[in-house]
View 1: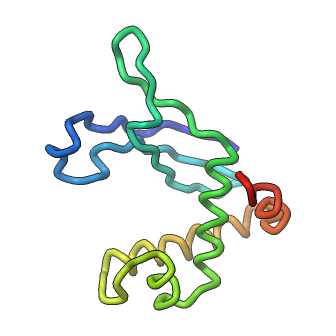
View 2 (view 1 turned 180 degrees about the vertical axis):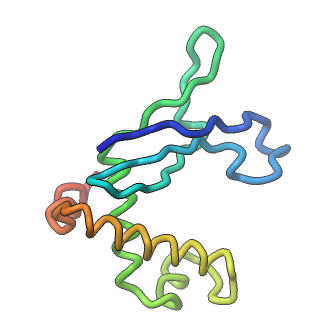
View 3 (view 1 turned 45 degrees about the vertical axis):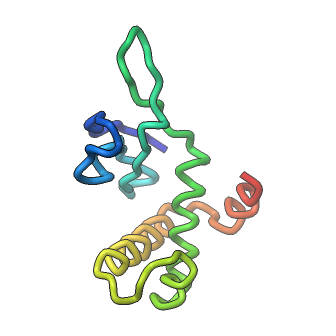
Length: 124
């Protein structure tokens, strides 16, 4: 697994943020030729010599997140919305659901044994 930091967040007070994405670091994850976007919030940064720097996410954090996407791909949209607290009438929810579907397809292409990883990470 290769992990690349691709964007620093705009560090501002939370009440001044225009968009929650402004407070997230963006990472590009590559697994066996498949690329995934992954985000970490400002809580996943550390201060070094007075400067806020991102902390590289752990591989298990990334895998667990991707396996959750696989789980979403096994659900109908309405069931997924109910389980995640989204409205079925939300375009944003639909877009997130479709991204989960796409990530699930790509993860299956990597050759990772999803069931054994799910079992290994169940208490993570």
